Amino acid sequence: MAHTVIQSILGLKIKDKVNNISLMNKIRLRTEKATIVQRFGNLFDEGVQPGEFAQNAGVQNVMILLQNPYVIHDIKESDLDVPSILPMLQYLSDYFQSFLFCLWLVKDNGITMNQAYCYSKIKNSKDVFTAHSRQQLTTKADGSSGLTEFTKNEILQAVHYFNTYFQDSSLPERQSYSWNDSNNIDDAQVPGSLSLNTITDSTVNISVTPAYQADMYAQITRFERARSFINAARTQSDLFMKITYYCSFLEVLFSGNNSEVNYRIRERCSIIIGKTFQERKEIFNTMSAIYNVRSAFIHGAKLDGKKMKAEIIESHSKYMDELCRKVFFELLENHKALFEFKTDEELNMYFIDLIFNMNLDKPN
Image (tube, rainbow, N blue to C red; front, side, top):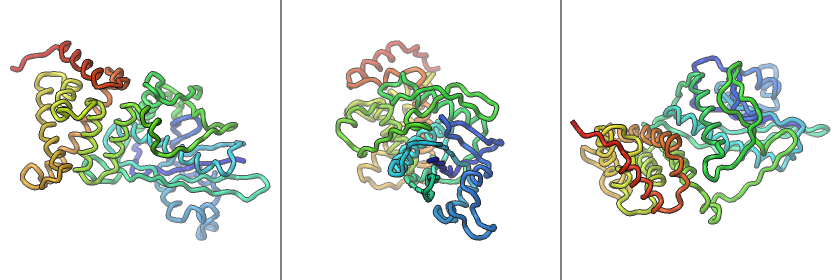
């Protein structure tokens, strides 16, 4: 039995010619269409009637595949049985979401994974076609959708982030994977490499669990919860909701309780990413205005007046999107210990130490 998984990527425009980018072991990002025809045969019999794959996937979905970049994964001679195909698609779809997050780390975008398909060729039996959709429509920081252009180097940068931040065993309580596959992009080599330990040619070990379990949730780190709020923000076209989720991202990282949250978040963001007195002051004051908007929204206040004009709210959303990106990088590069803290006291002591060790330049 052999399987081919394919999933198109919507909203991504790759500026440079890219034929084969390895995201993880045997899972590749492609743009050319010959591979689709090679794997699935004639999409349209005699150029008019839909072939077997097109009949199952739907003509419109096939056209989407042909018009967009896609990820493809071949599982050859696998003991993956038919009942395990759908859980495998669910697993891969979730895994690809981590790569989309890494594209966001490069820059703001509205890129979305489309429906996933698995075409299984079974000896002495009829081929099996399986589809899975867990599509989350994503928008940019201004609430719009549409194409975002990435260069080849920016794609490589996202792959590097994926390998570094999402396969880094030094991050607390991260799922471990084995590194043994060279990560070739055409003829280029990027730092880091990995393989998906749970999906190989010879073994598949996939389990599906309910979305919420109390014991499991207790083990979710600040890193995981923060990333989930960014993902939630990116699925919103309502800018007030986006801003609310961006603020929640910061609260997960910088506040362990609901005491003086507004002040605490503004202060700690300023400390973490502000390099000068003026930068820290600007961050502190800008976030005060943004938190006032967020507070008015979630507490049911009337959303009118000069401070609620569309252009101001859009500016706030863009500011928060970029701020969250900077915070995420700064913590991963220089404050990784913060993700490990279990109590508010540990978090408070960490920032007290930062404050007293800062080189506080004075204002002009």
